[in-house]
Image (tube, rainbow, N blue to C red):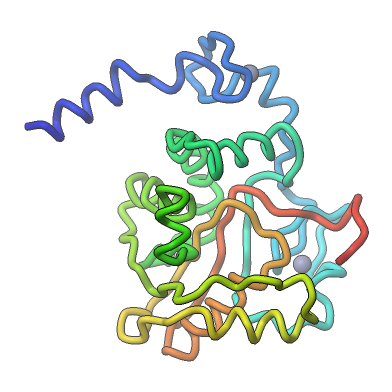
Length: 241
Ligand SMILES: [Zn+2]
Ligand SMILES: [Zn+2]
């Protein structure tokens, strides 16, 4: 009964579509964002890398960032390029307790999910250590996976746990970073076996976390591992790192 009341309140009283979730102005278009804010978001459409899904200047099979790399996940797709104003919203979602944005973001990820990953039978997320979870109060990647699961009915499974935080990554080479990251996760091999997995996260930056998880799931016998994020960082306007 209590759950029903909470659901009713969520859907009817605290309707996230009554104000724009970016600028907070009243909004009457029945969407999560007002038309003015919508215009500022950079959607990733045809001009992207077919592999990592990052924004490119023209449709590309392998972008500069993917070329020559041994990438473990099959493909990655994102809704937006990571830049203002969406980047500020993500910061609020991650560090400022704005959990409700999970519903907003997942609704935006739905279309990308359905047109790319319809064969998925498991959603999973990037795990956090217990310590980090206590500090932050929630795992934003898990929230997104749960909201996306609500919209798609694809089950969320905890396919990995994070045993330790990887600090001082900046001083390490890319190879060492990956190795360091790899030993920080423990994969649930039984659950991952034979699954078509989609890893859900907020931002694809270097992609190395998704990559390490994908390798772990594949080693455990997963049939496919794809990645969906709300945003990805493109290398179009930035120096590559
Ligand atoms: Zn707005
Ligand atoms: Zn690429």
